[in-house]
Image 1 (cartoon, rainbow over the protein chains, first blue to last red):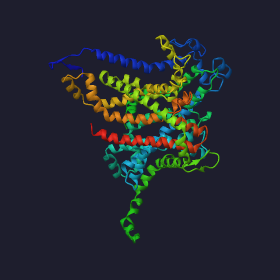
Image 2 (cartoon, rainbow over the protein chains, first blue to last red):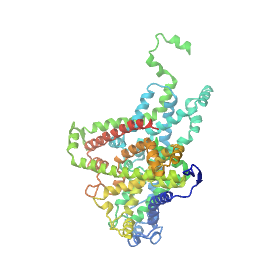
Image 3 (tube, rainbow over the protein chains, first blue to last red):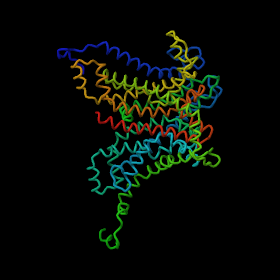
Image 4 (cartoon, chains in turn cyan, purple):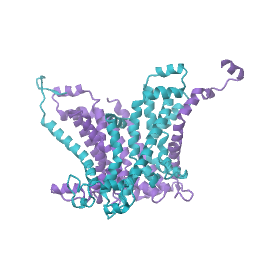
Length: 304
Length: 307
């Protein structure tokens, strides 16, 4: 690839062509456009809220301060917060961070365990109605979420689960059609022989699943865990409908409510950006930990 | 076992019953039980119930009143609905077309220039964060009086713009925000397709004197078609359900200029508590999206034979 053939078919050294230079410049610009807003969040979150009205352009924080973080993490009294440019409403992003962690962790664990269990039965076991049930699951993959939104809200309300964690978690806790489909594809691809010999040794089906299949399935489990984390951590509409209450309010909902609490007409952008950064930290941690695996998982998710 | 069974059994059991008596069947149903409960409660029943609710007038507090096709007749006459559909369509067209061009450009450039994981990692970054965070960032950057975007315009001698504050610019601005969030993701999907195109095809074309641009139009694009169509339709289906960004930034305004279908549904269901009519709108959206899905299935199959 790093060689070009000349008109005579001879190989010659490639010097950067004008086209390549232009392409690099365009790509470079797109990288800057992608990254700049992230710097702008950090810069704003570290700025003095009042100074932001005066200094709209400096690339560095306008009068550096950590107060916005102290404010959104509930480490300031109300009067101090108002003095620092806040709205005086109680905001406690530590609590919302905890709520988001509870919701997302239980969803990732539940969804993956129960989907994998079901997928194993669909891939390996023979039972009546198997293909019919699986076809139904696949059909559900094609139904857009909006169709289930209102009936599911009504159901959660009837159960008395509004403003509870179980209400937020319920719909995706026991399965998602995509994860069942995904695990089944993987299980179909692994060699049966080890499972067969374990069966001859008298191992139970559940024992085989836990001791043999699960350890072999670390890659797909990681992929799904990453995808499930991202989709539930970032979910907004469902937790907005089910859990506005402080005690179960997740970060996305908290940021939305925080935005509408305007102190003097304009939103408190310094505080909002500090809250946004708090909500982004766990995702970034996961991203750095998972590294390439995260990129590959996301790339895979779109191809299905 | 065999003896015990033959002494107990006077008549042979019917064939349909046999598989239900095997241990494997019981085990299998235990394996799928949690997922079956989840599927029934939160997918199957709601899908049917949604249809039923759409034939009623229901405010959640008093019992639902059957109105037959009343909601559907109302839908056809509802100018706000058609407006919402139009706004959504404008959004989808601006968003998906531009995003695809950007995504494709980034993918081709990454494919031809660099294999760097870092570059890919950067381009995907906006997609990792919630629509809420992304909406807030841009709300601030595009703020009509304090935002950095207007300062940049001023620096290059252009007039200030109201962006989200103007009925003429709001929906295009929302589309732009989501182009920023999704272009790297789309590029990553296209890149996977590009990397499956064998390199010797390009080398052969280069020997025949085809430059990069001609190779792109005559090799890359035709061979990428299946991936392109698949990603495009998936993106269109997603774009039709735009909600979060609008809920965070404009809430349907100014003057209904960003009142998309999902916002219309949200308002009817959860602000006016008109469950029957809200469900009817969501059924209309469902029909539209299922039509796109079926189209995708056809195209995808048609595309597969190409590679």
